[in-house]
Image 1 (cartoon, one colour):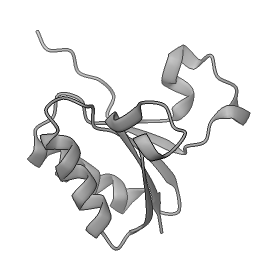
Image 2 (cartoon, rainbow, N blue to C red; image 1 turned 90 degrees about the horizontal axis):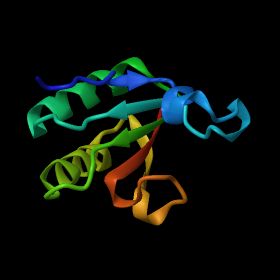
Image 3 (tube, rainbow, N blue to C red; image 1 turned 30 degrees about the vertical axis):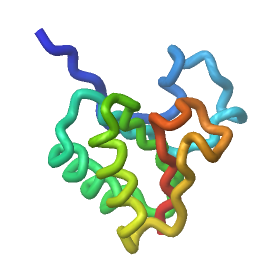
Length: 104
């Protein structure tokens, strides 16, 4: 049976809640593991609509790169996103399996 995760959550829940609130640099975490490209884009669209003026860590995973490239292209072209930091270019955890979206 497939294990489903909470899709959008507070960053305090990462790592079993062992991080202090001062060390958290994101407002929300969006986990897209196990989603198709269409499902991932639909979830990302609804999250961007619901959570304005926030910093969202989008975990798309490394995998074959299909979901990663589609999510990053969507973030780059969306007018609700003022800045995108790619995981491999920032100091965020996850390397090239994540993207950080700064919303308007």
